[in-house]
Amino acid sequence: MSKDDRRQALVQAAFNQIAERGFEGLRTREVAAEVGVNIATLHYYFPTKEALVRAVVDRAMERFRTTLSPHGSAAEQLRSHLRSVRGLLRREPKLGAVMAELALRSARDPTLAQVMEQTTSVWHGMVRGLVRNAVRDGHLAPDLDIDDAAAIVVATVTSLTLPAVAGAGRADQALRQLERWLGLTYTESIS
Image (tube, rainbow, N blue to C red; front, side):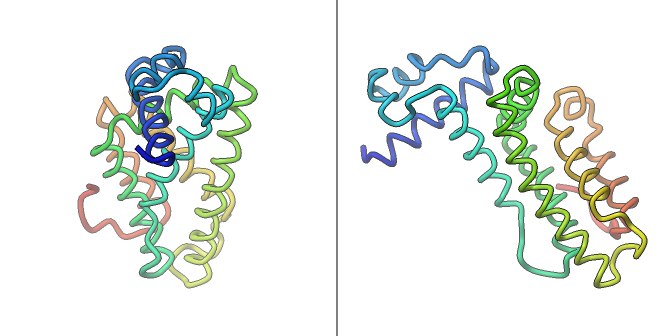
């Protein structure tokens, strides 16, 4: 196994533990054992548990970045992003579980809070750019507060990872209303 493969296997094992047992259930010795390495090898790749968790966040955000499409108008890209995120969370429920766990834990862990804030800030900036361009192109209302709209998109999509929202079937409802509120034409089911 190459160094990169081993590193990725360690991140995936940690990801799986967080998805199955929550943040508090993450045990670095068990992560190492699952990959077939000793704890010293894990620490070679990730000197601290925080470094391992940061890699898990990076892996999760990489999955979310796959929902971005450079094709179409800004409004089409925003609509596609919303629908693709919902589809991703349906196909990969562990992803939502991990993001929910990390978000909840960040309220009690300043280091994790900083990682999550950085991640959310980058995402907010990307959404803000799409909203700004959609307003500029006349696809969204000209008086729409761009920053507030981006914050609502990020907050709504973030809430989709919470079991109470996802499990209650409210995700599609929330995204349909968000599209209506933004003025994005709702023409097909969210997948």
